[in-house]
Length: 255
Image 1: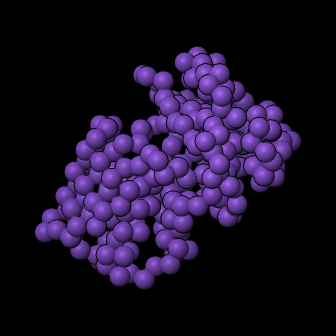
Image 2: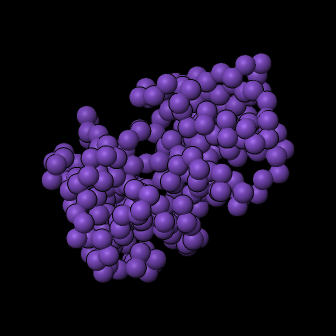
């Protein structure tokens, strides 16, 4: 079985506060982008085999989230051994959720291949154990997300008249540790527009309404990312932003 796990972008990202467990509560809108995707092939096999192709990852195959997804269902349902071939096209460490998407698609594929009978709610619960935004990719539809990104509320956002351009400045990388370490704590709880209402406004108004809190510290530390965002506007983007904790920047243009 072969599928094509797609990436996501964040329309706004508010860091609400720090939790007792060390994570942060967030508010964001996840938007799936289907033009940028990985290739994931899974087949039943005599041994557990994981092959990674495409963009070179910074982890061993046995530590890949696809492997973790298989182990999760194997431990619960004793599913058979499989071979997994993952061709990476989505850059990692860019705020695009590629690894989370791969893990969620792995769960969905194994559920179908071995007739486990898990519905979307059950798959979301298991996906959330693999990563904060994994659950989003189970339904893979626009959603308003809270908690650590795992509490999802369906949202209608019509993007049919627009195209999304995603770019990364060469050599730029923003670690999660750096992004969270640079957070301005005076933003926690600061009054800001409700993202659910903001994304219903004309996209030309989003520049004044929708912000990504990580930009406050990341853009000054990474001038190339800031320049890329500004260049999106120079090229005619109606809205541009860093996605997630960076380093990818997206621009929304009229078709």
